[in-house]
Length: 92
Image 1 (cartoon, rainbow, N blue to C red):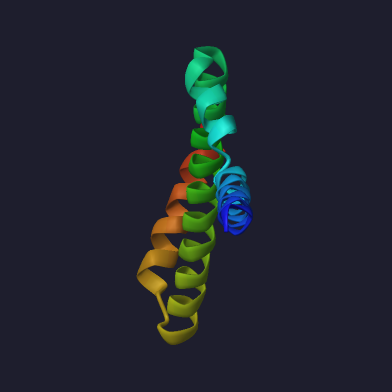
Image 2: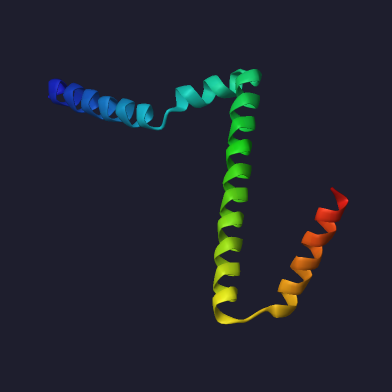
């Protein structure tokens, strides 16, 4: 009877150990206890999010401008862009 209980307890403990390893708590506590690594990880994550946001917004704006140009003839905006290009050329 006690052997069954011991085996059952060992199996439960083994399952708990595997589940605990999957959560990667050891890595989390290592990062929390090392402030330099925490700063580096957060800095790199922030750079990646910022770069992803910039690229995503650029693609979205380009697609939106393309769709608008296909749907609507925009001579007024074209004139403003031509004037802006002339100003830039004259500035050089």
